[in-house]
Length: 218
Image (cartoon, rainbow, N blue to C red; front, side, top):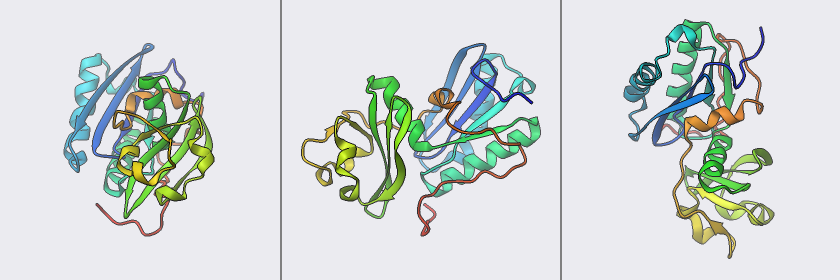
């Protein structure tokens, strides 16, 4: 089977943070449904999928693949998103494409800000951050979880620090460039990541990237 591509009809889901985001790619056009409902992903995600398909005039049988934000991020949100993605993929018999939530955040920031070098930061709680360095869409600093001050100083050079960066501004190097907006990943930007990972069969389990062993449900 030929893997889905930018000309396919695709669904993308992100539940890695407070927002629940669903996007549709069909005929080269994109649509997105977005709800900022912290810890209500279970209630929101399937109605958002139905709403988006109806708005786009797309039948479920037309979907050719599902992209899922697979972490890092909030434990409960990631589990909800993965369960829904696997259930839909199995029901529709379409492949899945897990992508990094930090790569998705970086793609969202790049679309909104125009920045090419982005230090994507998400709040990992417990005084730590999830972070990854992305330049022109490519990962140049591997996703990790650590204390803000433990991030490599070189990552900040010429980079826009975006996401939850403002929360930890006082723990970053002096002179770090912080985004003015508090960006969150948006599923619509997953379509720019089609070449960043491998599609997998619908019945293969999704490996979620928590980046820490002492995961606490929240």
